[in-house]
Image 1 (cartoon, rainbow, N blue to C red):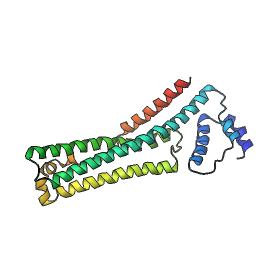
Image 2: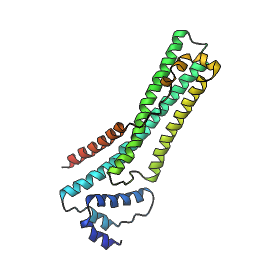
Image 3: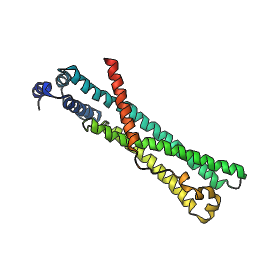
Image 4: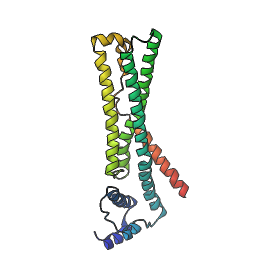
Amino acid sequence: MNTPDLIKLAPELSAEERYKIMTADWMAKANGEQQVMMESERKAMVRFPTTAMWREYATSVVTFKLVNTYWTSEIQIRKLRTFLCYQAAMHEFEKIIVDFDDYPKDERAKQFENLKGYVADYNEIIAGLRSYRDAIPLLERELCGIPFFSNATRDDIAEAFKLVEDATIMYNGIVRHFSEDKEARKIIKPIVNDITTYLVKDAAPDPSRAETLVAQIKELAESEMRSRD
């Protein structure tokens, strides 16, 4: 479609159709590709016959931008927090194994309680991270199915999820390995007796957490739109 055709067609397009076309053009630029639209076409796309149509379009655009701003940052922050929990849990577990002769009974009990606390934090943070993984496609479907992120950003997000999952598999694998070792079982008896408490859970997705994230970002977009009224 050449420029005059798109300019002529623009007044007949719905807010959703305009969002799809404009977002595809933005994503091409974000991915280092040649943008298809000319500036005259972009201007035609943002001339709206009614305020209601402008608001529908603008709310989708604001939501798109907020997701790219907030969700990308939150995912990276939660990745770092999860990895800190992983390191703390691994360090505490290592101390329990290596230093078992160096601590009196009450101090040994504290070590197990510390590890239990690190794992509890780990479980909570990773559940929050996984909720973003579930929320992304949920909100994309609501907004015309257009991907939110550039290819590079999507790769970064996928890598964040993979690093966290790999760390979780490694930690759980080590705990299970020592829990099955005849000699080590004597050293880590509290873990053997209550192993599920000391493992990071591979919990099923919680739709309510993803839905909450979607509702929050939509409310943030609505709030920004109200500030423009």
